[in-house]
Length: 281
Length: 320
Image: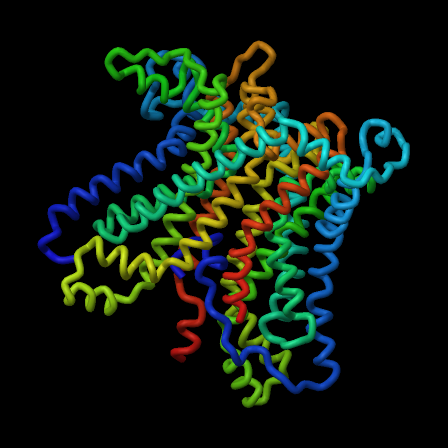
């Protein structure tokens, strides 16, 4: 804060930098190991830098026989279906609670909140029985039905914040200028909500794309594995107790890196304010 | 909003304007809000409502292997609950889960708050490096987290054992961290803490940036020491955020399932490595005692909802 503290501040900065390195180390180690050949990786001395590395682990994972492509397709289908349905439903719900006063609004808000507290892990058995009863085990629709229901509450809540953050005055001003209510909404409010929709969409995407627990219950056949399930199977020791760590890490990188990049990009976009420009005019 | 994508809505969503919901509308508009909530309500009823109904009713029914093969489940009243609560196994798992939750949540909070305060006090480049590192850890999918940590603690070629063995007189090469149950849960707790601290630290940091400079300056002029400022000014101002974060951590750590199930798959199968999530899964889908599993799930659910009550109150305050 002041000059007096500058020495302490410098020491503190170095310490925090060390913590940062420590925190990022597992991620670094995943990437580093993914470039090492089997003999290098099983040497007693770890290889700290990926120089002279190999792409062979990646080609082994991307090779058709590993099941990666199949799992990727399954993940894409489930995520796309869940995401589109969830965002549309949640957006409509968020509009209702932040722009309208109606009987039952309080109950809906309360339901949205309480549903978030239901521990998903305690509902598996019931959800499994329901999906099995509908003959939808190992299908895209079966698992998506549950994903949609579990992601909607938080998405409604998140979007509600964004919708409420766009002042209704803006819409009213447009209506005074001759827009219809719907026109005012589409031209004024909707564009301002774009960052909110993107953020909620990314949130829902990450939840669904990464989901492991429910998928492991509802998708049990090899051909219906999503990426997280595929990676689990790939990383478990074979009957001989052998693990190809280089390939497992390459697989982990392929599963994790798209999510990490997505996360970082949106993180940046989120920091530009929501309606700052619109209000200042 | 400087906090990352999944953090803000809970913690610092913009407050709704009091004039947002408007009164006096024609009838067609009056039906509109109901139409708008219908799809979401239906989706919730199908995906969560029905399973919840099934779970509540079946926790009072005998639903074991015979029922799997078509026999109709019979009502047995509280028998499933009695069976659980009078046996020792459920209590042992519950106790372990609560202890695991308490330790993990408290360590996560302490580290998160500490790092957030530190970020406020250090130079920009140091703060940025920590923010990036935390985002990296936070963005990792759970399964990838677990495979990487399993590699880090690998008994023969893992970095952890290598580094520890560099210490004089220590030889950890070949040590398997997942065999001893205490060590197993410590590993799980470390991994969960590593992944959860970023959310806490970045949310608290976002909260700290909202503490106005005027308040802290005034306190400084009045001669408050650094520690006094922290205890009397800063922490009280961000207290609501801290309460919500602590509750979320407790809820998440109590119902932890994926990490435990994955660690078990990596080399430590058996019920002495169970917490509530894997225990219920084993009872139901593993052994086919669906009635008892439903009862156990109900107990966990009531427990979690009890914990969440304060969280709900905070959220409802935000809605008003």
